Every structure is written in structure tokens, then in C-alpha cells.
Length: 117
Image (cartoon, rainbow, N blue to C red; front, top):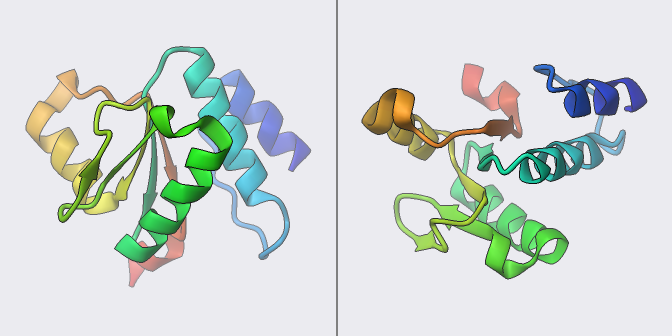
């Protein structure tokens, strides 16, 4: 956890695969805080809408409702916020639509192992 936090704050790309309860959420929160401090838009992605919605409410508590948005394809809440919760498909759509002009400063992908299935 400590090594991952140092890497995140230094701007490195990090893949963190550890057991439940080992502090991945803390590292993800630090990544979002770091991006916000650098005026970057930061994305949290999950493979299913229910998890996106759950994390949206968690991040609203952490960063304030004015700083967190949600895009699921079905719903759009505060889409111009600096922290965006969305499905990976929505993020891919943004990247494909906007190309090099896409305002994607950082991505935190949760439940990454689901994408291989």
C-alpha cells in the first residue's frame, strides 16, 4: 500500500492487485486527490452500473457532491465534475469520440479482472 501510494503521487502508472480489505480504495482515493491537485479530470470505472452508482455516492462523501459526476449511458449527473464515475464502455466512448482532445487526466479501474471475462 505504501509503495503504491508513493508511485501514484509520483505520477507513475500503477496496477494494484491485492486481496479484499488490503487498502486498494485508499490508494484509489489518493490517486483521485493527486489528480484534483493537478487540475486533472479523474475517472473511476467499474464493469457494472450498480458498482459505478455505489462508488459515486462514496466519492460524493469524500470529495463533495459538486466535485463528483456519474455517466452510465442511462444516467448523467454533474457530467462536468472533475471526478467522474462511469462504466469502462462510457470512458471508451469518450476517448474514441474526442480522441487526443479527450479530457482524461487519469483513470482508476476497479474490478479489472472482470474485463478479461
